[in-house]
Length: 360
Image (cartoon, rainbow, N blue to C red; front, side):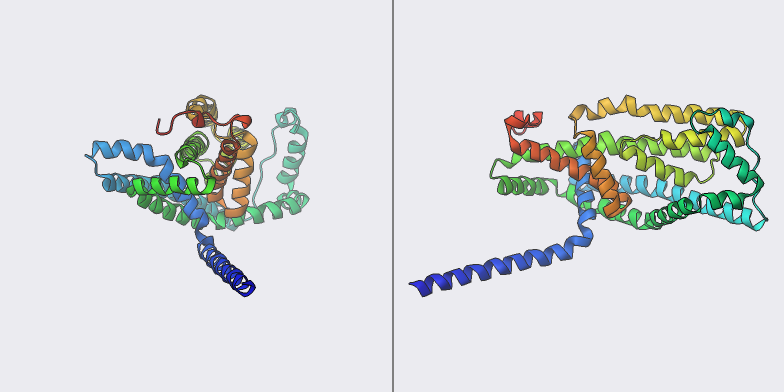
């Protein structure tokens, strides 16, 4: 009897070990694609209501509606990506041409710069030094410029890979949308097995959280950045592509684009004609304020998560996976927060989605 129990224990341990080994192997194989898969799921969940509407208009042809949405998504990603890359290339050519013409001459600062609040004296001093000797001014901030330059080159170097990951994720989302009913059944079964509860409630929480973050935070950030980029390019702002990337980064982490657009506006008033600078100022201020107008409507679907959760998710995702991690990190951590609160139950004041009837 003892030998039989010992043999049964050994058999069980071997089975568990084999299962864990298989799971670990699968995890290693999927690890390079985790971010892409997550982003594909996020896009699919976000676009599902639009696909449902389009499917009805197309007479129930779900695959055709998924193809059309995927093609539209490719256009939305490829066109801004091309404009951004072209802007960076043109900026690099301009800098190279300027260096080839001889020493770069910096005009002396206007005396009014001293009157700028807080930073006027420092900016005027640095600017004046640069007007006499640009090399001397750069040497004063050599360490900061070197660190910032390396970081910027690293970010820009990953831009092409990030765009490719976006395109692959978009293709994956199209496949998921084309098989939406089966995908939904898998999601509900997953939550039922994971939480030992009716998976429909938690699936609905997950869907609404993803859509709320994607539209209310990421969607508005992308819209604001696109509008700001149009202003930069139309006004002829140097290095418009870099300012566009910075605007996208700051808006996703909820800081806002004003730390970027204010220096750009000041620069344009000192270098461009007054009409162009004034029109750009009006445009960028309106773009910056659209957040206050659109956010309440977008988040009316349900507050996705506290600011801190979104901020940490976006920053962590950026350091983990680059530009695409900004989007995925904010959504994934917000989703985890909402599911955790829903799992805690009524004592933790769960989201209102759990108080509704399933399927409502």
